[in-house]
Length: 285
Image (cartoon, rainbow, N blue to C red; front, side, top):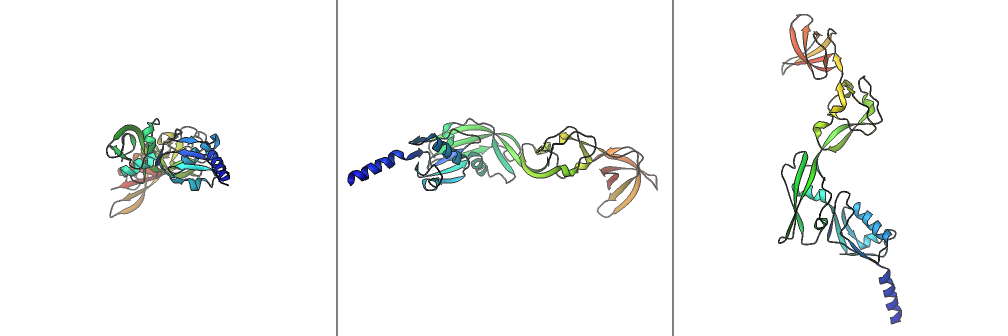
């Protein structure tokens, strides 16, 4: 009987898949080189485990992994492994606002920065990471005594609302159809490059063809002529006490946002106003 149990234990041990990692495994964007060693595992099991790591955020344990097909004989060391994304660690350490996000440009991180043991942690320092742009970030891995420093280059992205093309749209010289676009919230490198969500698309035309999914940039558009010389326009005049409408004759043509000269059709006085729509001008006193 003793011999039977010994042989059974030997068989189970020899067929087990042992994977050794660290207390915390740090995920890097597009990173494939995980700090792992294995024994008795098939290539398929290792591949499955790595794919799980890439999609994880939290704690993995042998007990949970055994429920996955092909990993019923897996054994982790340590028995639980925490998985964290480097970008999330940096954002947390820098206390960035919710509309900011870090995206590392540098991909080749030293192996020391791909894991943390129980007594280790990261220190993060960055100048101007509260603003969009390319920044140098100082990462320090330490246990309070030993320190390893690595400088990484990253983009600080800002969340903005943008117009995104629903379909492929060919170049044309008429105003844009708003129905061809949808509004999405995305992170961008430079908010000043994208066409502002609060602008009116129909007052502009494309200056090139764009493809489905394209984020509309300010450089993609040209304002169309909304006011023509001599054609009567409606003028809205307002200040904190007064709001009135009148008709005027433009003395020049104008596009959205441009300031033009106008003549009051009754008093014949000359004044200036800003083009705000098709045959519409605003004057703020």
